[in-house]
Length: 156
Image (cartoon, rainbow, N blue to C red; front, side, top):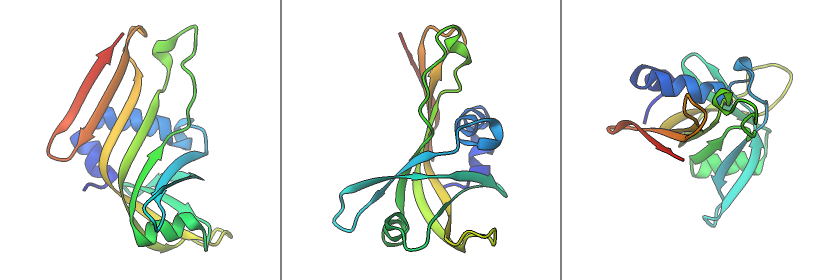
């Protein structure tokens, strides 16, 4: 598993694309979707916000939420960026979509900003970015996995 700063060192271009799709500071929409596992093993999807801080991808949860209970019991998660359509007039300018999979590590309570809740950081097992190639004519999918590095596929 890797911290976000390790991803940035190992796969800087992919990390920059994925971050642009996830980070509100880079213009991404605020609400993402996270998948967790219920006690019976079935999937649960929930809305979530995430941010980058100190070389880590972090996210929070309201206190007592099912999402937080899921992550404390079984830390596996998949996070998906907001979904937006490519701009019709210039698809090459689409920021794309990012997917991050890994394990959530409970850090403690959210920082004292007036909102109670649980704070997690991501130990990353997979980063996937889906977007368009530079010409805007081919779909591009880049992924990073530990020990495998970055792979890229393109299709019409």
